[in-house]
Image (tube, rainbow, N blue to C red; front, top):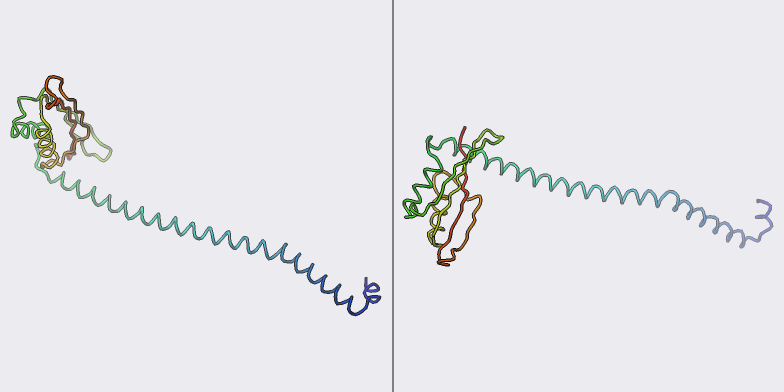
Length: 178
């Protein structure tokens, strides 16, 4: 190889050495630098994804703490409620106040114990021949009452004999301390 280089003119030697240096640089780049830079880009992408995951985790943690605080406040309100107050009696009293007591077809109380130890008390009430205003007033009275009840299910059917009136089935529930 050295013999071949000696036979070349100085100009050709410079050209061969330059080409050799170029090939060596290309091989070095292809085998060493490019894989390292690709790996660096991949790690930088992973870091960005992990930062986004961390931000999402912090957001979820904040939402969890907020929900837990709301739940604790609600449990305190339920525990502080005067004992002996039932959803069934409250709904019946509200219906009487609004003049709907004579239109109540049925009331079915149901209770179930939750994992947290609280008791969910539900009442399914069926009211016949009620107008929209009376329904809205009754729902507002039940949901804004002292028992913190909510209408879990509402089924409304218009009557054939008078389309202005409805037959309504409401499932209202509330939580009670054990």
